[in-house]
Length: 549
Image 1: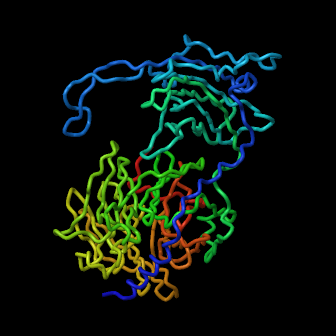
Image 2: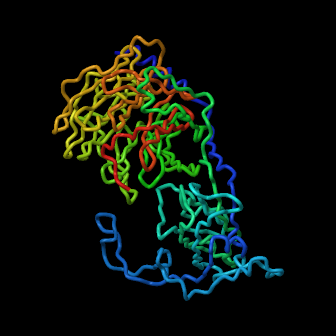
């Protein structure tokens, strides 16, 4: 057995058993200006004209579920909404205009125009459409480069299309989709906006609750534009610091780089991955959940019971998901600790098991994973997700392996590390880096990668065994220049392609894992114990098996 790893693993588990508390929503921050679209002055400022039209349920042709669980079965009759008025170029010129009155008019209607009751009561639907154009000044504020948000509260539910798009994600509460009964829906129209930029908004309003078919009607309680000239949903990580061991770090991490805290209150954050639709997914294996964070400060549960839902879940320190990755076509792949398997979440919500056994024996607890650009999937499999780690009676494999799933075949490609953990490809995919969670052998290995997925000629890339303390290596990533970033002793280490430590990024908490994000992939998102952090770099992340937007 490996007593040092067992002791360290159990110590780590004990340290992460913090009192359960709900994550705090990051503050949205006070906007620098607000445009009230329900007033004639506000509407005139952004050239907005509200138009409205009832929507109806109509009967259309459809198909029942087929063997593929898609609408490929027998023909049937179903229902749809008419008209479909979500498109950016939809012609609403014949729709009635909602008259807000003239700016500065002495008198106003007894009931503001957007508050007029619409629909037919019971189960009914209404479309509202309005286009807004960013003006040169908003309340004396220059909106150039700002973030522009649209927020509305309807009686009772709303879905919001922007320029003909309704981006949604599994588990998403609010934003473009229904938030709740009379709850505010807030969407980001644009970041880094400029005067003259135009946004077409379509609001699909519903009377509700639908199953209760209420006798009331549909109306807009509020509709505003919020202008944020400064980044929102981030505060400076006052406890963080950057240790520069080499001048070369200045070319990667600017001298004025700011360490930011985005959210906190988690039990143990892990496995972040950036989605090209503009949000971050990350695991909390202790809380058995996957969270979704958006740059406007939105935080929601993306998937509950993300790794286990057995009767004995209380025996597990980390029953939930750990590593997350996107395959080359954008499907989320999940390492499930408690279920001891690797799964893929299909775009229709179906879960596909990719790997759960090797040579008939159950995997330990898949930890981290990475895709090669051709779709080959690599993952590590230490037993840290089992209640007693290496001493757990559930353990069936006598080793901790690195595996490759390629062309439907699961291959054991390395077994020389006691606690293989994080892994990442070099930019040219010639090498695979794998680090080791073992306080008796704190190393990062570098293997050459064969076309058939196998690893060979492994060498020690970095050895920090002599560094004291109970922290070994955890998550690992590589940037576009081949620099390696590893959560390890002392913080987040930045390592040159030659294996030289250039510096260490120290957050308020010990980092566990990291991911590149943002449109240019130059923002590093870091999961660290109870919090989520980020730092802006000068170098983008390596583009390995990342799906395009």
